[in-house]
Amino acid sequence: MVDVISDVCGMMELVGGNSATLAAYSFAMPLLFSALHRIGHEVDPPEDVSSHSNQPTASEYINELVESVVNSVNKRSYDFIRDEVEVSVAINQYHLATDAILYKQAANIIANRLHITEKKSRVQNANLINPIPKGVLIQAFLQDGVSKRVLVVKSDYDDFLDNTFMPRTGLPKKKKVYKAFLAELGLDGGVVELFVSDSSGGYSKYWWRDFLELREKRGDAQNTKTFWDSLEKDILNPIKRNNRADYEIIRNGMILYVKSNDRFELNDFVRATLENYEPQNPELPIASMVSDLRRLPVKRANNLFDTSFNIVKSEIKARSRTTYHITNDIDVVIKTGIENFKDAIQAVDENGIKYIKIRTDEEGFKIFARNANNESS
Image (cartoon, rainbow, N blue to C red; front, side, top):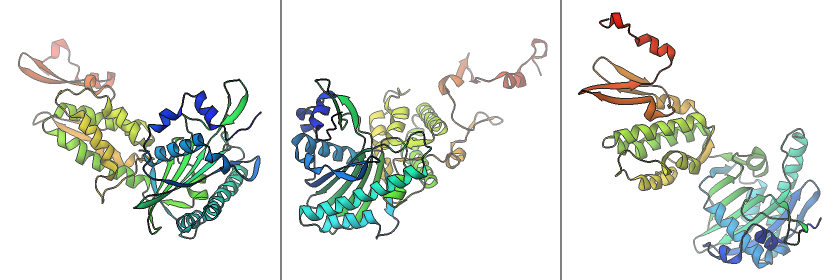
């Protein structure tokens, strides 16, 4: 097999990418330095393949990757457990570096740190069904007039056949399977924010805890509580008075989401609950509600939550319970989300007399069943 990390161009052609497509991406911050290392149990120590990153297609690939991570909706905030951890030291060296040699030293600190961490993790978790895959570590250092960024990405690379059916290995253009770390810095080098993004749908502890030596800024319980409180206050309650039917349907769908999912991912939540919703009131501003929902995690400085976290259902269970006043003598309590909400509970008007019709099971039906000979009871 021909092992060609540098053959990014061939991989892009394979999946339909081209330089015209890449040029459509805006790239706000100048790329001052980039480094590529092969990381894997067959490679000891990490293999520096940064020379290939000078190729135009490789540079475009890195730029696009940086932008995709920076603009990722689903990422989580962290802090270093101590200022002196290796990755923090390397980031400071990126900030202080004045030439390519010093940048490269910083990159090697991070690459070697990941290499050692992965070796230990493979030994400790030798029986895992899905062991840590080999891959390419991509680092990028960027700076504009107001801030700096250090990006560290572990990307898988795939075996494929090129246009001549020769077996090759390269970076996937469309499906970038990666774990990413983004450090947002001020011009003085001080850390403004640290983010982790994981396209696998989970946050591997070997990556953020063992390799990067981070701690979560906000725990899952805090994220869940803040998310639901913000959702009620800024998205649901504003439509409750004038759009009650839509409010109940949308809220029920959101409760169903947290009931049936273990992880919250903002993009997925928006798609599942609002993006394709057909309102009862055609004047309900769904598009602006979707926009407001996407901005919700950072809307209030004192009420921030991450856009990706594990849902702690106990934090929402009590909040999802709703009591509806039907008459002076009857209340209906809904304890959690209901499948097919519009069909399960319906308002019916029969000759001017209004009823609530509720779909039930056999036991519930028996409670209120009447004999034809005993109607008056």
